[in-house]
Image (cartoon, rainbow, N blue to C red; front, side, top):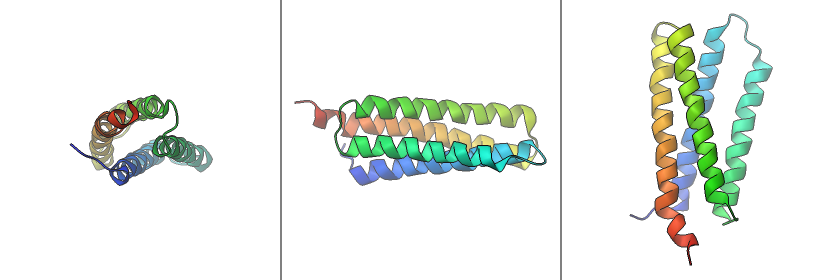
Length: 126
């Protein structure tokens, strides 16, 4: 199975987008007057962290693959957290949308880690 750097980049952008959407929906539906500063900082941190890991991975830096796997696990747990919040504190269609998108996000982080194993690990071994 052959994958490309563009495929990995698109997968990471999908994870970042899903995290931003589900985190925003969970945060905004949870309170009547949300503090947008916290939400903005959370999303910017995710974008910077994934961007940094992606640059390290594509440039072939040492420990880039374990670092990206770690980030995938962390944001996978973020999706699990969004599911827990949606299930306990939200109701209606919004909660179902957050849960569905978070499940897709978890699947995408798992796919991204699989993508790393299949496409990048064999290239790094000499």
